[in-house]
Image 1 (cartoon, rainbow, N blue to C red):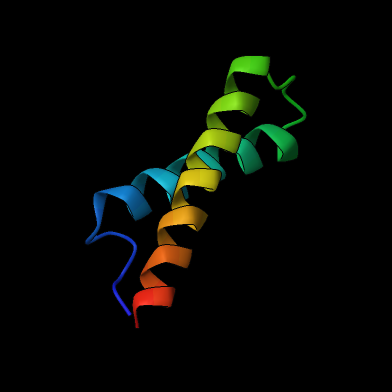
Image 2 (cartoon, rainbow, N blue to C red):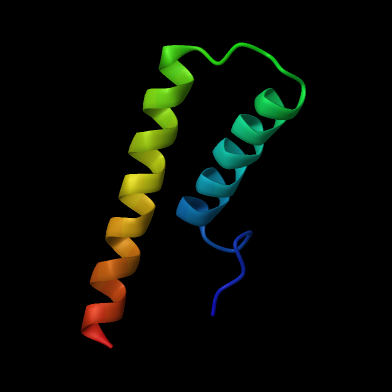
Length: 56
């Protein structure tokens, strides 16, 4: 399994999720833009993982 820091897609996914978690912990209002970016990034990441797993 690749480390998250070696793959740019994984790095971006982890970074966006950490930003989202930080906003929740610090009780910062989450903008709709951040919500849509998170949904897009996570959806893309999970989609590529599903395709990768189906090829194996």
